[in-house]
Image (cartoon, rainbow over all chains, first blue to last red; front, side, top):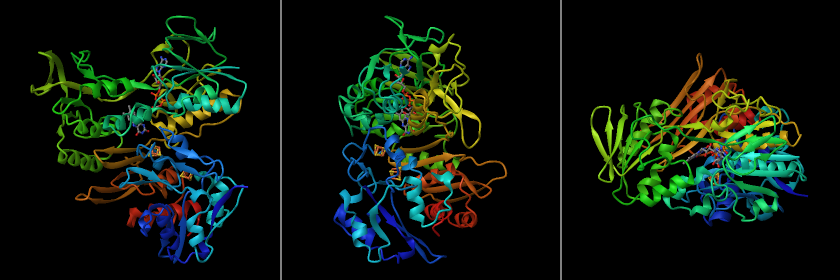
Length: 158
Length: 414
Ligand SMILES: Cc1cc2nc3c(=O)[nH]c(=O)nc-3n(C[C@H](O)[C@H](O)[C@H](O)COP(=O)(O)OP(=O)(O)OC[C@H]3O[C@@H](n4cnc5c(N)ncnc54)[C@H](O)[C@@H]3O)c2cc1C
Ligand code: SF4
Ligand code: SF4
C-alpha cells in the first residue's frame, strides 16, 4: 500500500526541525526558507500548522505543466518535478489550489515535496510525531481532511 | 467508436490521452495543424531565451508516446466540418470520418488592421514557426517595433532582449497588460521594463507600415516614423473558427458549449481557447484562453466523448506572467465587483504589490507583483468560494496572510 504524510497540527510545537531536515535533504543546507514543507504560525491561536503537497489524485500541477516536467513516481505516488525539463513558467504554481508547489528564484524552477523516495526527512526529524508517514488509500480531499484533523472541510475547495 | 480531434495543442493532446484511458478499444485520430510533434505555445518564451531547444517545447517527451497509446497523428488543416455526413475535410485527399468530434483548434493572433500588415517583415509570436523565424532574424541591434504589451507581448520580451535586439513597444492604451492587471500593477511593470532599457510609447498606434530599402518604416498616429527590421504584432488573439462556416455548429465569440462541453450538434465537442464555456465566477459564457483551462476542458470533453458523463464546473481566468524577470499574477475578478471591498499592500521600490478583491467574505480576485509563494491558494480560495469569516478582516489588515487564511478558512485548521 502507498504511504502518505499524515500531519497532526495539534502535536506541532513550531520547532521547525522538519523545515531544517527538508532543506538539508534537498539542498544540504539548514535554510528553512528553502524547505518544501512549511510550518505556518497562527499567532492569535498560538497554533502551528505544518503543510505541504498531499500528492493529490487530481494533480492539477501535473496536467497544467506545458512541457511534461512533473511525473508520477509509481512506487511512492509522489508527483516529482524533473528540474532539467521544467522551464520555470510557474503555471503549476497557480494551478495547484493548495499553494504547495512554489517557484524558486535561485534555480528558476519550481519545487514541491517528492516524499524523499519513500523516506521523508521531515517525518524522521519531527520529535513529536506531528508529521508521520503512514499507509494510506484516501483521495486528495480525504487527505486534506486528514491534514486538518477535522471533517467539516469545505468540499467546494477540492 | 471513431474519435477525431482537430488540433494538437494541450487541449487536443490531453483529450486524446484521456480517451485512450477511458476507452481502450477506441480509434483515436489527432489532426495536427502544424508540422512536427505536438508542442506547447507556452514554452516559446523559453525557446527564444535559449533555455531549451525545440524538443523542450514538445508536450510529451517520449518519441513513441502517441504510438504507444495508439493515437494516430495526421498532419493537415481542417477546412470544413460536415455534421450530417460526419466527416472533416482537409482541403485535399479523403475526408476524415468520425463518430465523435472534438474541436480544439485554439486561437490565432488577431492582427491590427493597418496598411502594410501583410508585409514580409511583419510577424507575430504565436507558433513555433513564428518563434523560429524571429530567432533567425534577431541579432544584436536588430530593431524590433512591437505593437501591444498584453500577456504574450510581455512574456516574450526577455527572450527578445536576450538576443541583444533594440526593442520599442507601442501601447495603444496608457497601460500594459490591461486585461489582467490593475493600474498600479501595470505601472510597476512599466517602470520595471523601462529600467531594463525597453522603450515604451503609450497612447499610440501605427497608422501604416511601409517597406523601404530592406527595412520597415512604421508610421505612428502622431506622424513619427520608426525604422524597424521586424514589426511584431502582439495585440491579442481570436479563436480559430473559420472552417466551421456552414457546419451548423453554433458559434458566438467561440464555439458555444454546454456543461458537458458539447456543442449545439450532438457528438461534437469543443475544448480550450476555442470553446466558449461558463465562467464560474460571473456565470456568463466566455472564452478563457489559458493553458490550465485548455487541459481541464480537454479532459472533461474526452470523458463525455467516451460515454462517461462529466461536468465542467466552469473556470475562471488566472495567469502568471514573468516580464523580464518580474513575476506577476492575476486571478478572477481582479477589477473587483460593485459593492465589493478590496485591500492592498504596495512596496514600489522593491516592485512588490498585492491586491485582493472581496465580495462579502469571499475572495473573488487578486493581482500580485513580486509575490510567488503559495499563490495557488488564491485559486483555491476563489474557486472554492470559501467563506473567510473573521479571516477576511485579518486579510484586510495584512493581505500577505493568504496562506494562513486559506488553511484556516478552507481547511479549518486554526
Ligand atoms: C508565447 C506564448 C506564451 C503563453 N504563455 C502562457 C502562460 O504562461 N500561461 C497560460 O495559461 N497560457 C499561455 N499561453 C496561451 C496558451 O498557450 C493557450 O491558452 C493554449 O495553448 C491553448 O491550448 P489549446 O489546445 O486550446 O490551443 P492551441 O495550443 O492553440 O492548439 C491548437 C492547435 O490546433 C491547430 N489548428 C488550428 N486550426 C486548425 C485547423 N483548421 N485544422 C487542424 N488544426 C488546427 C493548431 O495548429 C494548434 O496545434 C501562451 C501563448 C503563447 C503564444
Ligand atoms: S502540488 Fe498541488 S496539485 Fe500537485 S500533487 Fe501536490 S497538492 Fe496536488
Ligand atoms: S514551472 Fe516547470 S513544472 Fe511548473 S508547469 Fe512550468 S515547466 Fe512545468
